[in-house]
Amino acid sequence: WLPTIQALNAFAYDEAAEIVYGASYAEWKRSHQKKTTDEKLLLYKESKQIHATHEADLLKATVSGVDTQALSHRVLKRLKAGAFVSLCHHLRARSDDVQNMDLMSVTGFCRNCLAKWLVVEARRITDDFAADGVQFQSQ
Image (cartoon, rainbow, N blue to C red; front, side, top):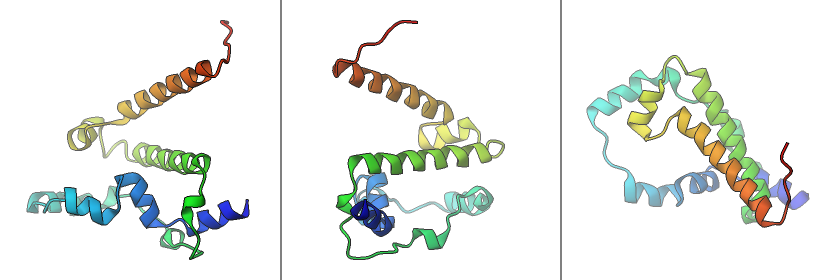
C-alpha cells in the first residue's frame, strides 16, 4: 500500500484538474476560456456566499517526486466518487439558493440529471456483471 499512499499524498491540484478538465488546466484555458462579461463578473461576486470552500492545507501535496500515475484505476474511481459525494453535499447545502433551473440554465445539468446518471451507471454495472456470466435470480 505504500506506493498508493505516497501517490495519494503527492496527488495535487494539477492532477485533479486534468481529470476534471480532460486536459491540463492551461491547455483547457487556451482552448475554451473566454473573457467574461461585466455582468457575469458581477453575478460571480454577488454569489460568493454560495461558493464552495476548500481547506488550503489539504490542497497542498505532502510529498514530492512521486509518480501519481501509480494510482490504480480503483483508487482513481474512489477519488472521483468522493468528489461526487462532495458535489452532492454542496448542492444540498445550497438548495434554497441554487434551484435546478439555475443549474440547468448555466451548466446544462441539474440535480435530477445527477440522479439519472447514477441510475444509468447502476445499469452499466449490472450489464458488466451479466457480461462476466453472473446469474441473477428474480425475487
